[in-house]
Image 1 (spheres, helix red, strand yellow):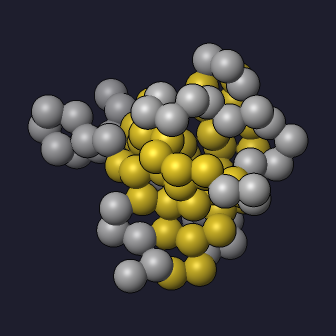
Image 2 (spheres, rainbow, N blue to C red; image 1 turned 30 degrees about the horizontal axis):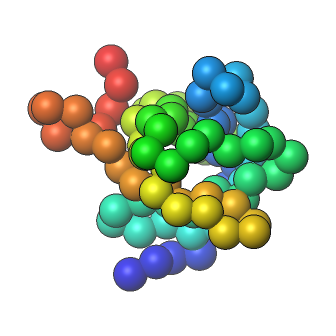
Length: 88
């Protein structure tokens, strides 16, 4: 089930650096990010994502680009071997 979540997200990938984007929705498996003015990474590429402007510092998580729309991109959580999904 997807939930509409409007939040600022720090999106990081070598092709774009670190940029602030907006989230569209989130689910157990991933998040939809509005692409703003960037050229998104290729399908299958791993990116780092961190929600910002929260009362506490959110973890940085690894995600994989799995789909595109005209508005943005779908990202899937890419869990590490320890299944945390959190970058160390």
